[in-house]
Length: 168
Image (cartoon, rainbow, N blue to C red):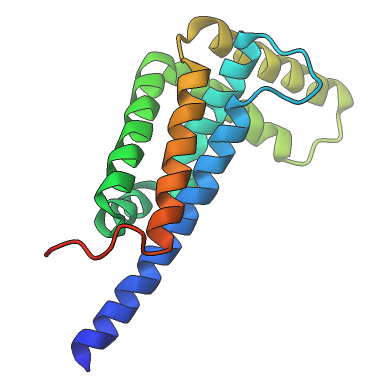
């Protein structure tokens, strides 16, 4: 009975981890895909993708959430998640300053602000950091889209038990 209880709890934790991964990966995908009906440059797509990729670790639950995905998910899901995290690491290593400056702008923009001129200045600063990210990064947004699609498909398959039970 104790083993069954543990397996049920682990199964529930796996579901939560996979659903969180799905949600976070879909956000990255939406950032990387071209907007329907809009003319976007590669740089604009790249900056949106990096912005969403930067949020990935937080959306997964930082180190604890990443660990849960890597503990509970099937091997194909773990491998794809690690590729996403490798890209996160690379982008943060190459553009950490710009990303933290952008993050600071965003935090200030969500805080109450009665001064329209100050808010406009923050929006301009945010746009400048996004532009800089898009221009300086070499992120392949189409490859990121493909990686997101593969990760989403694998996580869905794992949620449905499609990878079976892994040997202990």
